[in-house]
Amino acid sequence: MHRRNFLKSTSLLAAALAAGQASAYKLWKNGANKRVALVGTGVRGSSLWGKNLVENYGDEVTFVGLCDINPGRLETVRQYMGVDCPTFTDFDKMVRDTRPEWVIVTTMDSTHSEFIIKAMEAGVNVITEKPMTTDAEKCQAILDAQARTGREVLVTFNYRHSPHNTAIKQLLHDERVGKVTSVDFHWYLNVYHGASYFRRWHAYVENSGSLWVHKATHHFDLLNWWVNATPVEVTAYGALEHYGKNGPFRGASCRTCPHKDECPYFWDITKDKRAMELYVDNEEYDGYIRDSCVFREDIDIWDKMSAQILYDNGVVVNYSLTTYSPYEGYRIAFNGHDGRIDSWEDIPYQRGEYNEEEQADLHKAEMSFGQEETPTEFHEIIVHENFERDFESIKVPKYRYGHGGGDRRMLDYLFVNPDAADPLGHMAGTRDGALSVLIGVAARRSLAERRTVRLDELVKV
Image 1 (cartoon, rainbow, N blue to C red):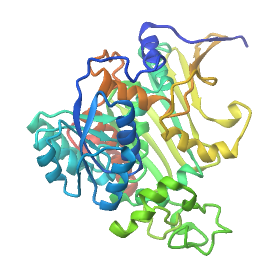
Image 2 (cartoon, helix red, strand yellow; image 1 turned 180 degrees about the vertical axis):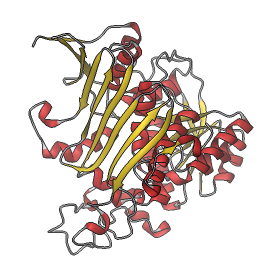
Image 3 (spheres, rainbow, N blue to C red; image 1 turned 135 degrees about the vertical axis):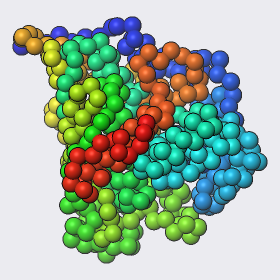
């Protein structure tokens, strides 16, 4: 079969892909410097939203305050970021004393709504990490507070901004395979990244809303954005059958576990300098154990998940999430009246090799904020039209850092060029945040009640 390899050169896609190619940090000077306060100084808050903003967006951002419940970690992060702003364990006091224009929320998922709402009621705009919140009641409270205060809330769905996902969006926008009728979307977390959620606070529904919310929010938002429609109802299945009480042995933490030599999930936190400084050195303040056992008996989230999602335009999605795969990546396929679009990310045998060391470090690379470089690898998107022997193989540059290059492009939109055109709708607000969360909430209820759940039972968005 003949294969034509090219990068589709429509104006919208060319603009989207070029947004980061020429190095973006100081490309535009029209963004006014913003007074910013950060609440939540864990690894994501202190790195992407902390040190990275100081070093690479210093002309656009000035930190006026840092807040966390852990005073030891606060001081560690203040030094790590290289700022001299005051630190607070009381959020209300920080907002009163520092009068920020924006608050960045990177706390535990279940507490996002508290700080989003308090900030809006104090007259402050908000940038929040996904998920926006973890249940229907908190979604409704955020929507009501925004309607009441008129403040802006931006939800940072960085996956929208990666060149690969942007290219898929462009093809769907152009209706390359006609009206889309169904989608197959399957996400695989490897045994390194997947296991990490079961070591941390994410392992409890009350903290994270489960991976239906914490992790799958990314995926559900992509789906909502790609198919450009509103989810209507969800039917879900899932189980906890690998981690938690299913383990053959357990300990208080990896550091103290007597099964270090026999447990394949043993993680030596003492070799991770950053984790030691952020968490282990500050355990005395809040008791949080960063290297908890993945086989704790009280873990109550699911480790395998599958859902069917119906949209108001008739699109049906088949979705799954696996947390103990040998490799990390995803497969996506869009079925349309005129053909099919297929793509994938980081499936080892698609490129003919499996590298265990790379698998262990994939998430670390994804979370890093590397320098923009000319990529040597590419993502592939296959467009196959009905009744055609030939298909198009579209090559999109692959970036290993910062969520596929999405972090940098997202931050440029936020801080450097906030008035830039956004023809594909990359930027997300509370409606997007709510809909992505509510698919996960509906999935939880579907599992509990063994029925199909409509989203309008949960919140009126």
